[in-house]
Length: 218
Image (tube, rainbow, N blue to C red; front, side):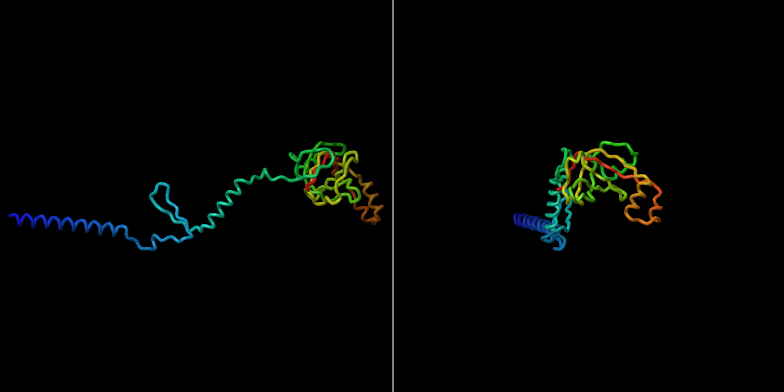
């Protein structure tokens, strides 16, 4: 009887070992994967879902990620409001803000008739400057038109080389009307033919401006 009991115990031990071996084999089979399913190149970035349920591998080079980070940093610290234009001031001190565009200024001019004046400030490019003293300048308006700017009381002048600079002028805008007879007279004095003179049949309006303060970009 004792021998039978020993044999029975031995069989139970062997069966238990066999079961454990089987379990280990199953676990090993579960974690074994082909090498190409888990290999990640050194220059890629692996991202894990926030809930930890999966892994997404994106083929993004580390240097590209660095550049994106630098770009984001630059955008965050640079503001359009911080970009300032330096101006040289002439005449009365004026501020650069709230100036009309050249399109807005032309629209203002078109509402005026001879004898009207309005106080206004606008910004545009200087097309030309008096090359003798800098006592006048022509500023660009929309539609191939110009504003002829003079300075209050002949009290100040602008640099002779200010052509093509950005300027802001503050003062009074007005329109001048040159009659047909006056225009024809000017053409005759300029030596134009009678045929060319006879083509003038409408008065000409000019856009004048008397500035008391001017800012010119440096």
